[in-house]
Image (cartoon, rainbow, N blue to C red):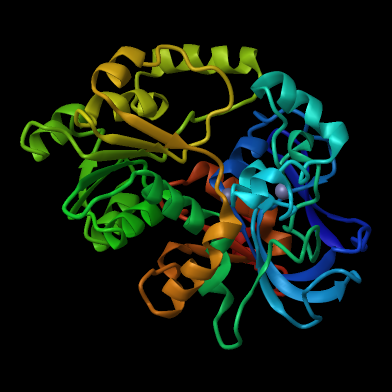
Length: 399
Ligand SMILES: [Zn+2]
Ligand SMILES: [Zn+2]
């Protein structure tokens, strides 16, 4: 089959590789119909994530049609499914608490040591995201092996286009869980720092969960326009001081909840990388790398901070004093995707959540290297690239 493989920093290629096969009884193989490039794929592209190996197939936002099933899969050939980016067994202690992103069995044992050393416990398995998270092949390919296919994938009813449901794989449930973690009460004002895909879904979710006002912060004008479409007020941090603006817009109190959807611009799992990032942040002086500090300082006393943004290592100058003295609550974590899928699919079908607005580009799999470059170089216009392996290669993207 053809698949988008990582070969090094800024070097991804479409290679011909072996087709995936059923390995375990609970596996299924799907033929990919749509797969998106994620902002976090750019961290792989930029070479920030350790334990990548040349030839690793990328892609964790996947959907497709079931073409083969193991004897213990509950899927049927021909089912259309969206696959969560987190790989969860459904039966361990954490899965029993619906904390699927903390599954103890998704990441094969030989890969668990690094996570255990860094974090105290091993990390979960993810598709297409380095050997630290299991070394699983991703779905930016013609076919994908889905482990624990009786637990993860959600079957999509006929007649619903891929574009409507693809983001159930990651960014929609991530934005939703971010808003849920903000523990929104009716009438609340919620600030969302960062209006990438997760931030934009957090804006929609915050309103659905009862926020009266949402204030979206970014510097890309196009993203702020999208946030406005969903009813958010906006702050462009290149034009205003975010803290002052948030305080002023909330009558001197501060937002009831702040959702940090930015994270470290270039996150990594090793200390030297983190120190490097801290150094960079000192010189850059932008808001991007300071988003969690900003969230804590801007939030009202007694408020809540939610952090879907990814942080990898140790963060310097965490305002622990402000956090304690203001009596804040902080909730965070990788997304427990499986837990939210039925309700979010229903919300899409009922028209309560709009997902297709996000797609700025549709490309063939063969165009994926050009797609990575475009996404990397032009983040304002490139809100989301969806790869369609069935689509013909288009010359205009090749430049
Ligand atoms: Zn993603
Ligand atoms: Zn589990």
